[in-house]
Image (cartoon, rainbow, N blue to C red):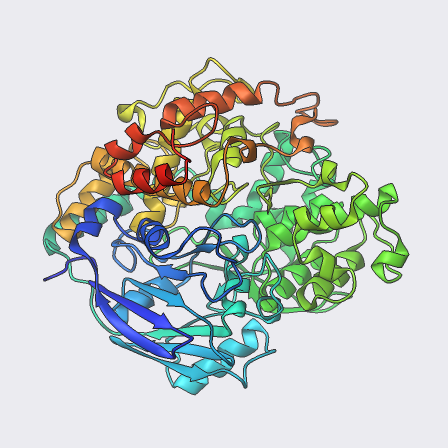
Length: 639
């Protein structure tokens, strides 16, 4: 079969048997699941039984691209990973930018499926339609930057892309990241630990194959039109000039900046952690992922002083808040240093910052002492505490070994009611977006997203009423104008969130960054615009509605995965801290009042049972997932 947009090939790797093989992509999957995380959801559902230990050889790691990855479409530099999360025991997923995703397609593959466990450290080398497993014994213990340098020289392809783990992944830190191109992180859910458990140190990809469009002239025209739309992109200036860290002052002014382990949402000294401060003192230049016209990446350093830090990429907004503001730091040099250490060790900066702020509060309350921490006094506003704990977590040394399990397990280990201020959903640490001050849409998102608390997967749902933005979804039923960001029930939040979530799912399945999805009809990648791009690229004619149905299919497959793992409505919740009133700042007094009613609205919109959280058979059959319904029925977990 002649493929357009897709490469039409899957690379399958069995590390236990030291075997690689190439399979054909199933043609029917293209329109049903589109690609990326949609493909990954189908693979994990089909090929992995429920109850598998996430750190066992039976866990499957999928690295997938989408049809738009590596093309002329704006911001098409994504790679997506899917696996069972060792941090949560639920659906695990992480995305990274850079060039690894495009290079995988140029090497001739839409995705890699990795199973088993090597008997010693290995890396996978992929080039132009073939692959081999090579020894990585000489790389074990190396940092991300060291590993990348060695491998680029070893394979003799300086243009290649390297995805690897650092010492944190080797030590099975539950929130360790898969890093690519030195500093780009597929950070969340512990994908680095999954690689570490398989003794897989790295994947190196290089290729020179072409992605062929079905209608070259029309695809070029559609891509050019998309780029013209992006010239009017609402965040183009702030993300280009300041990066995502430019959001620090904006969110603080709105009373939406998580501070002091989410005790409040306002930090009087936020400017010390801001994008303006980074640009003024430590920024070297902007950086962009493959095909990106925004360039939100920061390339920074600290040349001297107490915290000298080499050139590297970052920090972003999440890092500045979670490793800075959350622990009341006012020294941005220390945060730049902490970001560099996390990148090089291979740690998710969101989870790392969250669990450190939790530990400081536990120390402040007397739940842990210097005897527990090895003599370290955990204090708010102390940069050395942050840097010491980053090092200890990555190496699983001392108290760092406790924190390396994530905030949920750390709270269980400490006991004494520490779970009351452990801020997570399903075990995934809450990021730097607080639903009390930013948008009640995050109440729904944190509760129902398959991987746990996340501001980006599937979408930045808060932009709907915080900015506000319609993302070109009004014609598909998005309620407009949006309600007040604090409004809860009776304002059609469930209906709105469903469309916002499915729009975000399109980015994960089509293989692009989410940023271009946010805007108005004429300034972002709307479903209609994405449908035109997909159709002219692949030759498979679709509408915007068709794409949203495919996105809903993937969304429900992920939900079904979690249901099979034992998750239900009881797990779709918020941490106690996010249900308490904000104590200071512009959002003072704000609290989530009608959580259960919000959840009911979302369940109704998605076609899920309000009592159990299970998916109805009717919904699954509507989506062509009768086989999924049958399997869930066998275990008594269908509505």
